[in-house]
Structures are given as C-alpha cells and as structure tokens.
Image (cartoon, rainbow, N blue to C red; front, side, top):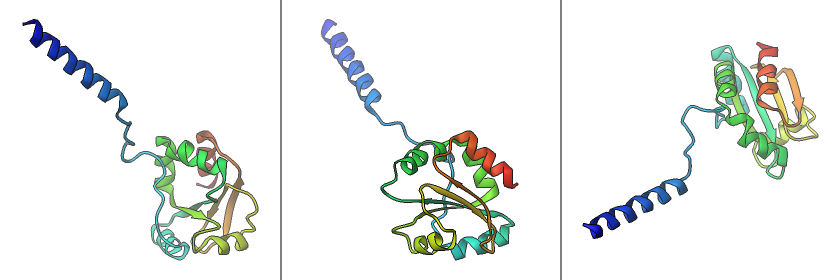
Length: 144
C-alpha cells in the first residue's frame, strides 16, 4: 500500500512540475490583428469597409518597437478598438516592400512611427515613440 501511495505521490509531483513549466499560450482574439497585405490592398480594403488605416512603421533593431509589439499591441482592449475601427498594418521600413516608399511619403525618421491614413493615403495622424495601451486607445478615439 505504501508503495502505491509513493508512486501516486511521485506522479502527482511530476505532473505539477510539468504544468508549471508549460508556456502560457496566447489567447486567440487578443491584441491588434495586423493584416499581411500591401499598402495598396489595405487602401482598397479600407475604402470598401469605410475604415481608416493604422500603420505601425518599425525596424527590426528598434527596442521600443519590440516592447510595444509585446505589450501595448497585445492588449485585449487595444485590439478590440483597433480591429473594429482600422485596417491594421505592420511595416518594417527597412525590409518590407512598402517600407522605403512609406518612409519617403510620410518623412519617417524615428521609430516606432504610428500612422493613421485614409483610403487615399492622406495622413490623418502621426505619433512617434512608444505608446502605452491608454495612449493607443486615445489615438484611436481622436480620429473616430
């Protein structure tokens, strides 16, 4: 009997240890959903849906860009606001096809730069630097 209880105890301890090490999985539906489309496709989609376009202009080496992608952009409330109101794009200014053109058109010199444009490409709002969840929601509300 002691042997069975001992084996059961070892099994429970092993399960508890394994469960603690399991990574927390991201919940589906949280945060901003960025489209994997070109700027021209985003303009067409925005026109069809009568939405504005939100563009996260970033670089792979930008620390604040990475922090915002891991925190502010992952916030559930931010995601709800942006996913409902905008066509959302992430553009690596140095590596993506639309990057250099965006940098030239909107005179982007610092990262992250967040743009809100209309379906014709007209700049509505520009914000430079790391943004908290509250600031992102205020940004979205300021143009809606």
